[in-house]
Image 1 (cartoon, rainbow over the protein chains, first blue to last red):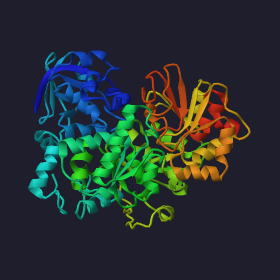
Image 2 (spheres, rainbow over the protein chains, first blue to last red):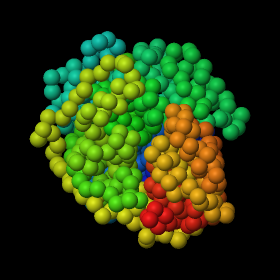
Image 3 (cartoon, chains in turn brown, yellow):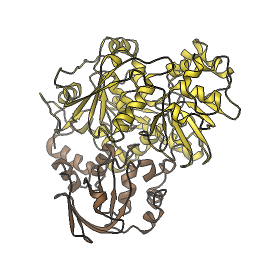
Image 4 (cartoon, rainbow over the protein chains, first blue to last red):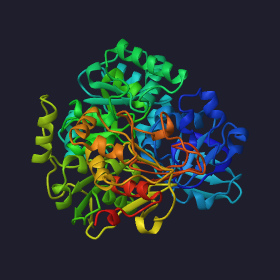
Length: 174
Length: 418
């Protein structure tokens, strides 16, 4: 799982309410995508290209755990989200919907908005092409990598149900 | 093992689990509200397409809307009702109260169980000795509804040891707000927080409630209090359904302990833009407010209404202030009637609203213009959650809310309780 694209850089403690405004929570995904992060950088929704990389600071995606926030980001076609660290519901939701996320302490000091980044999720590495810097992120649990490769939780759960009897009384573990 | 580890081990059919393990556990209760429940129902029917495995374990509460403000929202609620009928899940319609209070008061939340929900404040149920965590729509739609299960990474545990006593006018909510600032937003990411100590032991259940409530906003996965006699007595009043009490083994149940003394604490206020922006009320006193509310996920308890009434009796709110009171459940409203509190706060100029989650996210009430400010018992103060992103939200105790409403400016409740 690799991505390469322009870095869109955001700050610390950004709540999901700022990713998708709560009054748009029941809007179409097309509308949510068109206004994603509107209060923080209106250019993002307009100019983001498939494969671009969203970089943010500490506790990204705090507040409501609605998966519409990562879904609206995924709808822009971004290749990955790279953060100092993510709020746990946002972290979980990204993998469940199939959007690669890397926790990478030090990333905000290492990149500038507009840099071209190459991200390798399995290796946990971000390369900043302007400076040649390699930033090592945290390892991702193999269960979550399996979930990403499956395309998210829903296809993974369906597959586990078939293979390991998830629908039965005995549990399956990843 | 501690309470969370024991519950997750039992629910996943294992003898033992340890922090970092990924488990697939049986879920005892799924709580959905009208907004996220709708989003979840669309994913379940459009993308999963399997039957609802255990409809009796799924509860939907219309709490963000106490009535639909637009035709579009009326349609959403109608679709939710049809979804509930199609799948045979429990439905509590408009006017029932806040999702978490309805879940507890109707016996769906019991000690020793696994409780999940679409509301991010679902960890509040750790107050009763549950493992309770908020999950995303796809977890509910993709695993809980079709299989009755959810995946979890077993969290590391931090014991939050609390001691001390408050002076008059300082409340457990002040301690909880202060603690949010002490731990910090994201200060406990992915951890379980075990609230313990003399301070917690001495609190009644609905005051204990305020501590697991903050866990999501410091980044934690869940919070819990080991059940004691108070828990069992509380449960015996609510439900005859059976449960197994689970308690933590001491002493090595947490990987770290943080100790706090709340003695001498002043009333606290968390000002927008984030919950970590907590100050003693004195530092913010004098800032104008136009709205006051006892509501939201944090408020609407009988304790809140009593605290406010103690300040409002014989007084009137300031000109230009609108003070809305939102009971967290029908039972709380009935109790407030019985104690004469409904008339008391009405006489002081307050307006009663139906049992619900109040103006949280500006769906039914309380949207603010850019120039306005609110002081409330809400659980959150993020920009744009209650109208304009430029509107201010100050969070405080019910005493601080009432004192500020009387003055028209943020005020220290101790000046009214001499």
